[in-house]
Length: 130
Length: 136
Image (cartoon, rainbow over all chains, first blue to last red; front, side, top):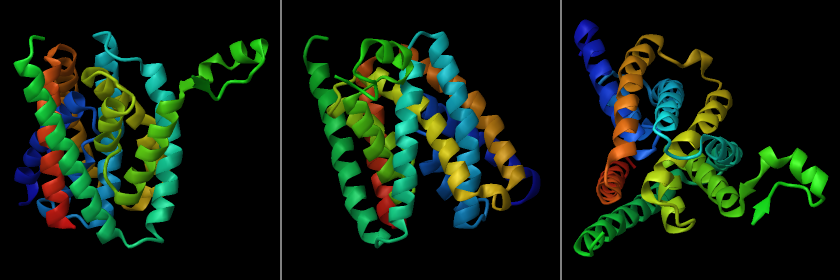
């Protein structure tokens, strides 16, 4: 893809990533990085850097929207995030010293099990009167 | 239980803005470390931990995670020193779409049934797991 088509696709994909980000409380990098490398042809580093820059305004907009709807506590969330930021720097430094591929598989299994548990919990709670 | 606050009354009130639940500190650190370690967004780690460990409701967990991503992404931007790597055109195009999308998504988060949220998030996690296994 190139030129105008690519930019239309990027905006459209941005909408999808933004909706999922606001709805699921995630950054959206998990979706944007593969898209940027596979479709837009960016290198892994450029894709990660670019997606990080997109995540920031997306999370700000999502949080402002939630605040208007009276959902959540933005103050607590921000403080929680500062702790997370410290952990993320630690994790990034640790990543340089550890074999990432093995970790990635273990993590994929963990995420899959947690995801299935959540679907199961939701289905079970549907059967009970709310 | 509160931490990050001093023990004396005067100190406690002065630093009240620093108070945060102990579980949140642990989850923030763990989520952050896993996120930095594996290059995944913090949300797919923090939301399940908030729900399963800190017993947050699904909606509140999504909201807390989204807010937490603001400082986390700032730290990421600083750590990776992205100035030279960012592709400005794609970043702007994605941002235009995703900021509009985030309004819609957050509006849906405020209204949707928690069971639907839980199902959609669970399916998203399974999808991410498949994506990670394929790419990994």
